[in-house]
Length: 320
Ligand code: NAD
Image (tube, rainbow, N blue to C red; front, side, top):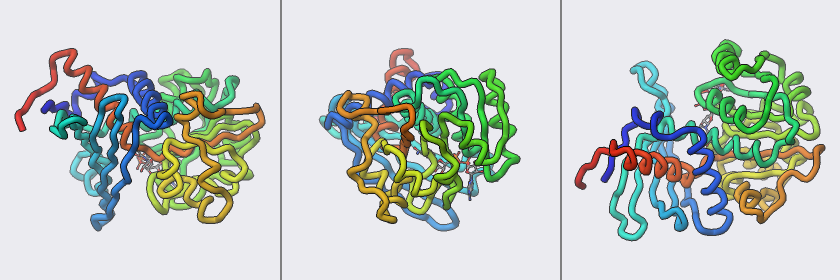
């Protein structure tokens, strides 16, 4: 079995690698060549969450799982609150083939999913990027979004405004003007909106968002989280990574519960990538991608890390 430690990942997997791996995975899911297994997520007490995301990609010959969760006491110990590790197995024999540090990979694959949705669904002439959220993932999201459209400006809102200057520094690195604004202004100016918060209640309302906007709602990945008002989902054309996850743990869970939409209203983004479904149909349409984060994304980027480490001869081997 190969061991790829967290510290090596930054040199092994680029955002472009993550984009290509996740895009191929979404298409394989839509063609029925790859499937995610049901998510396990449990509360461990004292705010700790732990779970498993797993799947099998027959086309990519990848089988495995990501084990990880949220451990709020970690920051005080000098380690990241989100911790995850990917384990890969030979799909023919079940033998373990690799254990890969999953923290940076999670940020890269999540940002890749959002960027793929922008690439496929946002208007080509999108100029203003709206960011709702300014935590750890937000910086990755901003960088990935900037790769797929020629944005001229970033407007941002966060419940905790003291976190915004750090996101502003990322925009400055990219040469983009950055302004902290109200949600009214954000919705009125943005052509693309990325939401990436751990909010338990909708902040972005239907009335904030104008026709033609693309939204990548990335923060809601568990029951009870919510970033946008359900009425906005009823007005938008809906896309997701995986419909089963979207309706149970994703942003659509609330609009489904309110009877505003049905699972049949949600199109897998992979179907658009594979040419099996239409993406944006007009410049006035609102498109919304509910990115819940699927296990196959984790396996795809972990496999990319393994392949690169093997190529370079830096994968550590252990017998198990
Ligand atoms: P973080 O802790 O670094 O940042 C949290 C963000 O949420 C900040 O912007 C913070 O101001 C905001 N926030 C906190 N409490 C809030 C509240 N009560 N109301 C509104 N906003 C609030 O977290 P992160 O690592 O940036 O992750 C952000 C979210 O993305 C989390 O919910 C995380 O679980 C989720 N996530 C999703 C995926 C996916 O694949 N979809 C992957 C990774 C993380």
